Amino acid sequence: MSRCEFESSCQHNDTCGLTGSAAFFASIPQSAVVVNGPLWCYFYAMKYIDDENSRAGRCISCTQPSPSSLVYGTEKDILRALSFVKEHEKADRVFLMNNCSVGLIGDDIRGICESFQGPWPVYTMDSGGLKGSFEEGFVQAFLRIVEEMKPCSAVPHSVNLLGLSDIYLKGLQDAGEIRRILEGCGIRVISMPGAGDSWDHIMAAPSASFNLVVRDELGLAAAREMEKRFHIPYASVGMPYGFKGTEAWADRVLSLLGCTGSADFLAAEKRRKEEVLRKGNGLESLWGSLWFDQVLVAAPPSEALGIAEAVRGEWIDTAKLTVHLTAASEKSVKAADVIRRVTVDDEEIKKDYENWENGLVLSSSHETARLDRLGKSYVSCHIARPSYDEVLVSDLPYCGFRGAAALYEKLWNARLRQIRCSSRGHVIKEKI
Image 1 (cartoon, helix red, strand yellow):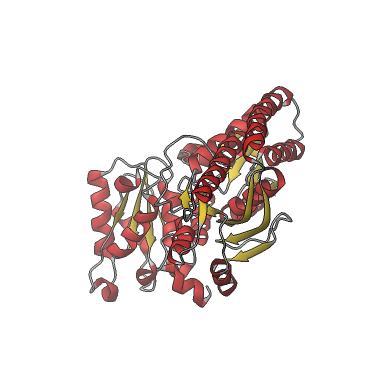
Image 2 (cartoon, rainbow, N blue to C red; image 1 turned 90 degrees about the vertical axis):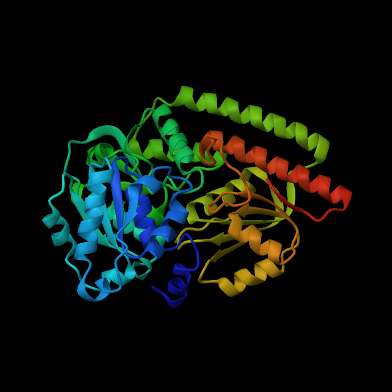
């Protein structure tokens, strides 16, 4: 891990490997998660997970090792924590993770857990900032679960969706929309690890005939491992955004699986698109085109690149489109004028903020707070976590056909507020 990534790991609430691992394990119902480390790491992970996963406060606990344990070992702390889970939790399995400092001790945590002889299996691993970012922790947890899978007979025209997470902004809603699209096209979804799927569904993943990776940074490593273990082919298809983008996404998936019979479903979605765009044409006749001088998209790669492509390809006219990726990605989109990577291109990103002059920001609260500190004008819509200053409680997704309608609505409302504030001479710092 690079120096800048290590320095970020305990300064931001979404970059620690332990947080990523805990998020993946906590997404599996009837599971208990034990952090073998100090309360700081427990609260650090909970701050990020608890907002989206209502089970987190009940299923995640902490060993809280004493200072002497860092010298003599954490066996007593682990056994005490497992006893607590046994007495107070109704769990079918337990996941125990070492944090950074405890991982340096060298305890045989698997042997310690086996000696406890609890009523459930205990799965162990090292995690924490020294193991990398949130994404890397999520991947390591995912690979740990793949180790438990067994070969199954393949189900024709079936898929696993890899790279979903229920703690991403609109994570569960986006997962539901992708499932709806696939099933509408006659494709069976076997498993969606990380998005609230049960243990039994996840263990059935080897029966899928194809793996669809929607976020490379979360799901690609598991797809490669499952191809090696179970000979399941895979493709990185990204997240579907926009009407055109979702149609193209569905066509590609159908081609990969050799499926037909989706005409009625896609025809109904085409009618949805036509109705939404008809309303947009009416707004253009009143207010002019959906124009922003500049647009900033800052989010994880699949969200950032997919939304950027939809923004310029079918929604918005703009003079400049800048994309800030919050995780590593080898992908790009022609729609973007500039693509930068957080922690790698920070000096250039700093200049992007300093030179900002009004426009639309599609991001998390980190980016809008930075513009606030610089006194910059903008209108915004949050597409990534954290979202401290925008309430999102509806069941509408951001991806897929339903998500395209929801985002198109938000973009028009952002433009109308910008027009209204400009006509009154107000400084624009509006969140939509």
